[in-house]
Image (cartoon, rainbow, N blue to C red):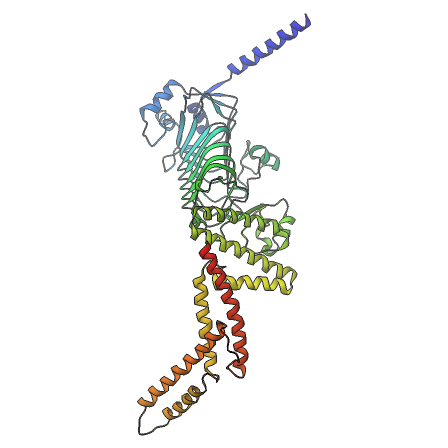
Amino acid sequence: MSVIKFILLLLLLSCSQLLVGQNRPQVTLLEILEKAITGESNVVSYTDYDILVHENETEARKSKPLTTESWLVDAIKAKGLGRFNEDGKLIIPSSLRLDNCVFKNTGEGGFDEITNIHFEKSVILLRLTADKNGYAIHLKNVTFDSYFIFKNYINLEIEKCEFKSFTIIRLYQDDAKLELYESKFFSFPKYSFDPASADTVPSREYQLQVTDTLAFEAVEISLKNGEYFSFTDNELQLREPLHRGVSVYGNIANLDVSNNRFNGWLKLECFIEKRFELTGNNFFSNLDITNCSLPELSSNSKIDWSTIDSRQLCNIVHFKTENEVGLYWPRLGELFLNSPIAAYDGSYYNSSIKDFHYNLIGSYRRLYNIFKELGYDEFSNACYITLKDLETVRYQGNYSEYGGFKNWTRWRLNQLLKQYTVYGTDPADAIVGSVYIILLFGLFYFFFPSEWDIKSKKMLLQDFRIFIRKNEHGYIKPFFKLITGFFISLINALTLSLNAFVTLGFGNIPASGLARYVCVVQGLIGWFLLSIFTVALINQILY
């Protein structure tokens, strides 16, 4: 009997839960906005509601499918409600918070378009779902003066919107789709929270409860299992571009980041399964792909090196304390003390930041392998040069920190390799450099006698004395004789320089005095530089 009672009790509880779920309060988008535009409450909040699409709202959408204003704004205008700014946007003076609500009667793959609205305070949308798969919210021409938080199980499309504080977007459903294009992210203040009761800076606990972060990123985007994320034609105008930027997290099958203007950094910390496109962007700050897993097939990655350029990759570092900032970045003093986020771009090195330095090298190495596999010689060479530049910076840092002749030699040798052959990628530079060296030493030998050029030097001095002495022959004939002797002597000097540089061998060194020792030094320089040229030439032939 007791078992039967227990089973009946469970059935009763299940039915009661079912009834509770079926009797959730209901509201429409229009009713939500009508309440928010009054400004009677600082916060308009709906939790555990069903947001219905009524028949009259559906007809309103169909009646003006191409209108520049949404059916919501049209409906509010028709009722004579609300205030509008100079751009014709409906002003919402209250904060808006929707939590654990369900969009009903949406239709398969349907969407709600919300356009021409100006939110003066925060917008927080949490745990929103829909009764049909593929439902999306389309925000178009919407302005957010305060922060925008979107953490839900529905798709999102953002077009021509303006965000004046930080933005957090997280999609938790499988096959999530997010499109963000032609939008602007403006100057980002250090704090911009307006908690539920008032526009004051909230406690650290409240920040973490609402955002799960301390809002040091201007834009945070996360897709748990995203099918597609497009971030195109957007513009970031951030007040502190060194410490602010866009972070992208999660698993994304297809990621497209194209034609954006960044004055803050872009951090990709995601697993990209199928296709990745990074083209046409202007990075005025840095790009971090340290923890980004690119598609296995290089052919599925379309990356334009010219939009990254050298020294644009970085390692975004999150610090926990100000002491940690000072430890890692002693050279930059107070520059990073106002923020726990800094971008390390490899411009200097010491042992305390070794891990960050090697992370950055790993990022360039992955791009180098992609470009090389795709046959993009220009891009792979540019990437390789940057890798060697990072190596040179490390050698310089080791010498500054530890000293030692070996560290100094490594540093200076890398500098020489860059100047002479661009780290072996441009043998033509080596030829040009060799010609300059031969000419320079040849000019030096011109002023010193040698066994090859005893007669021409004496004749040159004699012709010069005749030229400066007035005689019956005039100046023209002695002048041409002097010039001829000059060129003969110069050719002999250049021949000596060329012979010494290419180390053909003299038997006995023909020069005397100081020139004799200089000739030995030039031979050593020539042997070393020609060896480097040979290696660079072979490297380019085999490549």
